[in-house]
Amino acid sequence: MATPRTLSATTLSSVITRTTRQQHVARPSLRRHLSTTSPAATKSHPPAPKLNPRTQSLAEPAYPSLSYFPPPSNDPHGRAVPAPAPHHTSLAQATTTFTSQTPRFLYSASRFLQIPVNTHTPEICLLGRSNVGKSTLINALAGADAHTARRAHGLRARGMGLAITSKTAGSTKSVNAYGFGPPTKAQRIAALERAREVARENAGSASRGARRGVVKEAPPQHRLIMVDMPGYGLGSEAEWGKEIEKYLAKRVMLKGAVVLVDAVAGLKEADRMVLEVLRDCEVRTAVVLTKVDKILRETRSERALSRLDEVCAQVWEEMRTVERGSLTWLEGAEKGWENELWVTSAGDADTNGEGVGVAGARWAMCRMAGLVEDHRMLNVLRNVPRPAPKIVSFDQLEYSTASAQRRGKPALVPSF
Ligand SMILES: Nc1nc2c(ncn2[C@@H]2O[C@H](COP(=O)(O)OP(=O)(O)OP(=O)(O)O)[C@@H](O)[C@H]2O)c(=O)[nH]1
Ligand SMILES: [Mg+2]
Image (cartoon, rainbow, N blue to C red):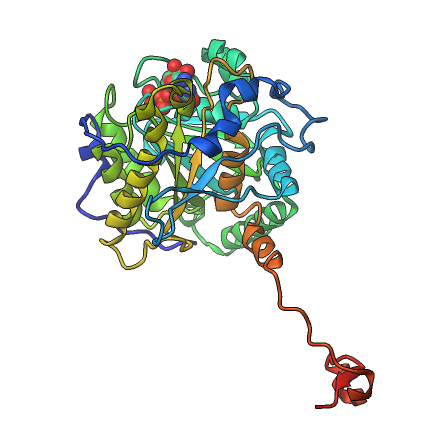
């Protein structure tokens, strides 16, 4: 069982209903990297898979991942660095997790105590201001066709495992969970062991009262649970904040939170306060920028071109400021924040598919949940040029001893 996390005086409920306006200073842009993923370019890709695309799930994802690392400290222009893409098999693994079977709508809870117990399936929650695109991203992660997802509402959407989206802020009014992929063998074994433990505890407890205290849990049905939260800001209610805060502090299987930031609007004060709550609850946090298509469409405007670079810089600056208030919520640490920023346009009406950057976002979430490994640094190290081996003449070689060979030494070694 995970130890309960502590909360600071900053409460999410105080964040709710607050809206601020911020002034931004133009910075150098990420034009070169983004130009490879403009809406025109994405239109040439095949359409994204519909729900349950069993045959497509192992194929290389249609869109590359799109993420950025902070600029090196010696870069005079302070430009964000495009991160190396994860290996395509790793991306495919993440895509399979989300799209191999139709996602299932699990529950909708307006109070923390209504949320079913989960001790086996990793959970990732999506947080962000209302209308930032949380529900839209959930649907895109599932590989749902953007138009179908936009049209689906109520029971129809629920039946398809889709989140309900709307132009009106505050459309998601409770904590909604969606199950993705089949459970792993390890999850099933852990659940069986837990069930046996519960049975033993029940057999050992003399009174019915004690037996009732033992929590029963359904066997795991999914590999990953994504939790769509109500948004904060416009159209939200203070009560939601309190319940979300309890969830962040107490949920045992919460492996990470994704804070969505509107790439056009930038990071607002409410987002900063949410980052502080995540810091105090020691929840691993990644930031995803949404609606990047709106920036890409305005490519003629210099101001628009510099916008993404500016938002990235603002987010990193904010994360570092928030980090200073803690000794444990550190950049890159297991319970800290990720300096890699994921850029998406999951709800782009112009791309008749999943939009830009969704494959990468899937991978980032699977990595936080511990379902895929990040081999990128290993690949970088493998590609580092090594010094050429020193050439020795044949006369300078001698046989190494048998015991040295057993320890892994080559049979022939230089005699000097
Ligand atoms: N252009 C564009 N529009 C988007 C994108 N993502 C979402 N939208 C639109 O933004 C609106 C709000 O999207 P939702 O997914 O409902 O936002 P939300 O964060 O779930 O909002 P709440 O439930 O109110 O908190 C919808 O009209 C979406 O179509 C995007 O990447 N690009
Ligand atoms: Mg929503």
